[in-house]
Length: 314
Length: 314
Ligand SMILES: [Zn+2]
Ligand SMILES: [Zn+2]
Image (cartoon, rainbow over all chains, first blue to last red):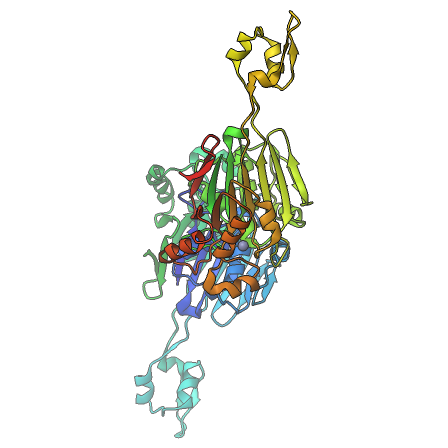
């Protein structure tokens, strides 16, 4: 799993940072990419990466502000034009369907695939054998959501040598043992699954939040997450503005990560008022509260390896 | 007057060319910029120029395809955010108002200025003391328009020395003479305006076309234009595709310029199938038909000086 930041700015594009978008690359896990938010020119940013728009399986929209959605129609159109024909699911607040459908209708854009819209954002919004996605409402000036993406524990590993030593023959019994069931051999002896398997490793938990003030549900969504992606539009010197405009300071992002016992914090949605030379001070502000923390820049990529159980900038 | 190409590609953005947008800079003429089409990330392109979004007075949309309009909501929002408070006129085919208004409504974007929409595109759509804009429908797969922008002749120049020699005193009589009226002096002698003025120089004519097949109205709109901006999505080897998709070849663009007796042709809306190394051949194809011709690239700028009466790349 990799997290690739495509746009880490707030409100408007600048030369340094584009508006919000983030790709959760699940290519090894499920051969797919999940996109979180899609500000204007997200497809332009993708041109400078190895991402293939047709690999995008799901798009999650945290809220309907323009800096989080204006790139969606263009990306969807180009995905079709470039040969994408698999369906896409779009999860977003009520209004996202009307937005996409009216823009595509007015611009006479025909897609070679279908879009399923999920506008009911409450609790578990997706679950299959591999992943589970839970959502909750945050605290912004308009409805804004966070998403907690949990990878299911990996399947248990069969200890093949030990099974053979216990007399299990090659064939379907091995599969049964691997799937957690005990089996009886021809000689009447019972082999227990737990004796010939190693439990599967737990998966990752990534929490990606939309624009928000410091709030309880951010902490809840981020509980023990391996990675918490949190906005940090303001700093301590502009704390008052943060509250007024429904945003957080970088310190509040760190406070959320700390209270949630999240492992790694990555802060995005940075105001263009911050200059590159301010970054050192911002990082300090954040690490004073939560040590394992990064500020994201466009095209920053982080990788999570199951054996290391820790996110690394790559 | 300068013409600044902000996006010269077709259909989708590529690393070389963004989707359609062009700024007609009328800063000396009327302290304003007129924008023609606004593909996604036009505001991003503007970040790399000296253009000020608040100086944009009018936006002309040739047709509703996504590669010509998806950048409009973001640009309008940023114009407001950056302090723009003067009204904007948007001229475009029916549907442009619904597009802008529904996107701004759904994304809760409030502008600090009003937009006037003009969706009736027929004949003269704008005229004041300085300029006149005429429009006509072209031949594309959806309604697509071209715009002919005519600068009015400059005011006559008062030959102040000659007026003084004829006994005209300083003051209001001079202004009267300049404005074209004859005057009678205190001694009863009549001074004719034409004897003490030089006629104003004619203004420029710029014709900017939307996506189109070769058609009569393109030739009509371009009659004796100083500059004709024409799409050239295909070349001779793909002529059949051009017709099918409602586009022109570069050679057809040159043919239009020739038949219209236009001075300078600039071709935009280039397919990404053309590689930089193809350009020499494309230019030849075009100049075989119409000598004074250019292929536009993103950020190319051309200047028209009234005394030289000719467009130059700057
Ligand atoms: Zn935002
Ligand atoms: Zn086009």
